[in-house]
Amino acid sequence: MTLSDPSSDQPASIVARLALHASVLLIVLGVLAVAYPQPASRSHSRADIEREAAPAVVSARAASLSAVAPSGAAEPSADDLDISPTLAAGGDMTLASASSLLKTPQRETIIPKRPRKDLLVHTVVQGDNLSTIAEKYDVDVDTLIWANAELEEDPDYLVVDQKLRIPPVSGVLYAVKTGDTLSAIATRFKGELRSMLELEFNHLSDANTVPVSGTLLMIPGGEKEYQPRLVYIDGRAVMVNAPRGGGRFVWPAQGYITSFWAPDHRAIDIGAPEGTPVYASDAGVVIQAGWNGTYGITVMIDHGNGFQTLYAHLSAYYPAAGSNVRRGQAIGKMGNTGRSTGPHLHFEIRYQGGNVNPMRYLPQ
Ligand SMILES: [Zn+2]
Image (cartoon, rainbow, N blue to C red):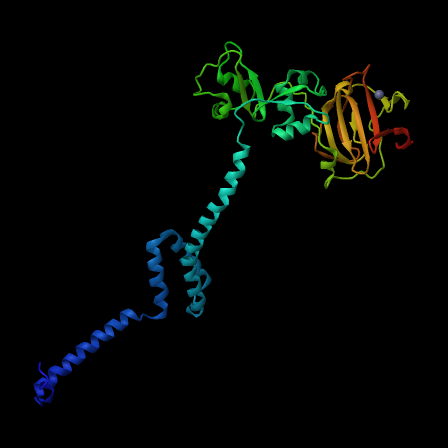
């Protein structure tokens, strides 16, 4: 076509021009129809796009969408919800980076807790007790006792300048004997062979390694068959949120008083057959439970009001150190352990650290 053509009045050319306009109009309408769909189909198309990206999530969300907005009336809110997967995807990414940021400090706190590679030696100083030493090296009290033969015999035995072996982690430190196998050692001390292999201290290449007699091996998390369970807990520490005694004591056992308070016996003794129940004289927190030198098996309770009570020579005890006990709760059985002649309960009441005559506090 030329510029002179519009001036032409030929009907054929007008028809051709109309046809051309019509076709252009059709194309434009067609393009508009595709580019500008109805609102209802808009969310579908968006959902389709998302379905390609994350099929499972979108189908689940589509189900929730239909549940939330079954009618087209809620279209705008449905649209908002429809956008949320995109936001959630972005949110997930943010969370992922946030959690990786969170993991970094966690890793840092784990590093200092990595088991030591060597056995340490602690020299006892004035004021040390097993609990403070255990806390200092991040092992439990039993671990200290099991690693030091003199403590196993008498857990109370601590003197200044005494050297204590400090294992790298909590568990049993064991000197290999001829004929031992790793799996037998693990079984014997209720530990796991895998954790023995993983512990750098042990220098074990594989489970079939035959350990050389005399080698010290650590059984992480292991236990010894005989446990002289002795746990001291700092009285102040357990006072936090601890139940307080009402200052009204009940008799710790039924029986006959065989020894009263005296200058050389700052307690009372209650005699009864072995196995007679022993009760907490008031509510409180068990601050020591287990073997306690000449006291034998002993339970000590802090009542959180300045009073403490002590129950000695037991044949058995129930609550572990750190347990809360109610007044009158059974805490053990009368026995004859420690320095004792015949089954009896040695019962002490202490106030502000000093022994007081229990007869002044027990109901008459
Ligand atoms: Zn006594």
